[in-house]
Image 1 (cartoon, rainbow, N blue to C red):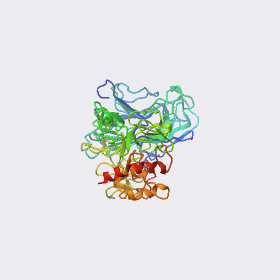
Image 2 (cartoon, rainbow, N blue to C red; image 1 turned 120 degrees about the vertical axis):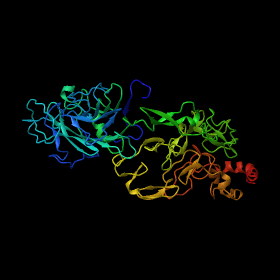
Image 3 (cartoon, rainbow, N blue to C red; image 1 turned 120 degrees about the horizontal axis):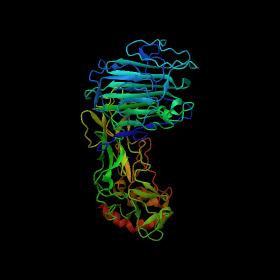
Image 4 (cartoon, helix red, strand yellow; image 1 turned 180 degrees about the horizontal axis):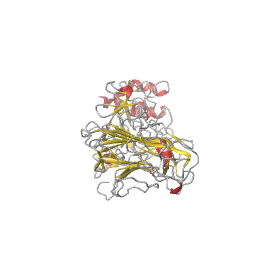
Length: 577
């Protein structure tokens, strides 16, 4: 990272990285290899002859990438294709056991650096039928059993290069397990600078990890394969998680950083592989409370923590909303609707003997769920059914928003990116390209990927496009405690005065024959009506299924509320005036 002597990223299943696990012993990915480029296998007219540890002659790439490839600050204008699952820029690399990144003097892009062996019985490097410039010199070896049709191929066109390892076996001449993978380089377009490019790794069959000479047996064990990027300066590299560890093959086929199993995409801008840690939660230095919530953004070879929440008025939620280092420090009665007071982040009625709900206990601070008596939760937590839960636990924000510090908000509001980037999840990322979006998505002129079905669809405020149609952004949303979803945003739920105009007329509801309005009016879960943080129905109803914390369905008992309301009727009427 910036300021350190060694800069590296280990790309695993973090923010934006999607993984699904399969049960089969052999991993089969969702993606496919790109073909249709000529040659006997469709992967291009040039290939390496059957060999072990061989490499191509040097390949001049300037006819296809006139500005070269800016790789970790060095513009590369030629490359070598190596049998052992990588391309290099400084010279051919026959090394079969992957050295741990970083490696000196070997700038490399490695979709799968391992001991590939494409030989089979009666092999002849002249008999593979390969033509075109850059044919590799085969390395002769002992006769091998079990003939195969595996090979290493490449194809160039203006602004694009495709390198394919098609059903390759492993040393020594084994074909019982195969690997099929591809490396695709694409010249960046739009506002990208000279030498900028995009990289894609594709894996369709991932059946072995180690050659015999790397300590393996049957394709596994020993020193497994490595995948990623190495600057060749003994300092800078990017490595996919689980490299040189058992399980790397399955991980590459069964996982992704773009949501398509077996597909991994990277952008190289100004020589830098864009950091995979962008968008990760972090703590903003010097900030307190909710304002310390941030997310990382790429800066040079490292990241910075960008503040995402600004000070707001205190609420009864056990969160330091105004960022002054104190939580719910405002007068407890002022944070809730009378007669409730704020107790451990929950608006709770002041209690007197017999005045609490069933399942609650009257304490010095107010009515508390029986399960929560004596439970002390940390900041930004509250007690629910005896357990401390976080402010964002169980929250499903409206479409396009995220939960931080107990609030749903647009993480990109106020974030400004340069002409070459767009904001996603609060972090600036490179503009999309026609090949960088996930399957079923289209790159828009504004630099964002969207569903292909939604291209050209314009939706009104509070809605968004899904599957080609405009839908309510609140559908399926579960707002944070004490909030309700309206017009695509989680907002404080209605106060009782706004929710109930004829309060006195509603007293008939407490005898069990009418609506038990006190739950909806006073809002045990935040002093609010509406859905008060509950999930909206699919039909867009703003009704609620209210429940006192730990108090069971149906809210306060009629007797308790009858006593309380008789005493408070005048107060409520006076507030209405």
